[in-house]
Length: 279
Ligand SMILES: [Zn+2]
Image (tube, rainbow, N blue to C red):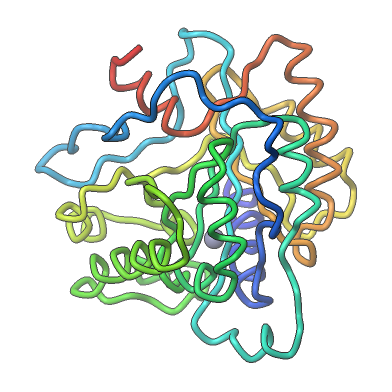
């Protein structure tokens, strides 16, 4: 499992290194009906953990029906601007288009730096009711000392890093970003959970590693996802054409197969709402 975690984390690192994009400029399809229920004014969050630490969510209930959340990380660090300026593109508009075409509700964990680099895409994703934008830090620095070689954020700057990302989302035009935070590399400890407690976020991990990092075999990625998914699962994937070039093709295999098995795709917020005892 360590190997698999390292695998996905490497994707985070690499996608950061290559200015990962995750989106498309296309506005949400006008044909898609508006959500029937009004968006709740306050998204569901988990209650604080022991000692008021930031709560950590990994997966939804296993016994409340066949639901699964696909999540896509959009990484970028502060130092990669020059590569973006040089024209290097690592977004994945085909993936976002496929999610829209297949009408798969999804959660995008976006870095603030990415939203600054791709404000039009961030806005497009952030205003499409099919998606929800959650926080993946401002610059994809680690929140623990030893996290796959990522630079680290000091404890006294962790909260401001998260808030800086939210500020970037709002500046880009993302509407109502979710109070969910995914630690870069998934790395966290008690110190980090304590530092982020005032931010009021729920930390979101995962129970299924998609294995799309550096994968070129879409069938292998699809198999790994399909083997791992259980009711309530959170699947971590990426939307980086360069570092995860098979993801869109894997999604096209995974989505119909899971639907065939009776699964319904939901955003992380729905899983958390269920976990919190809400309907
Ligand atoms: Zn990441």
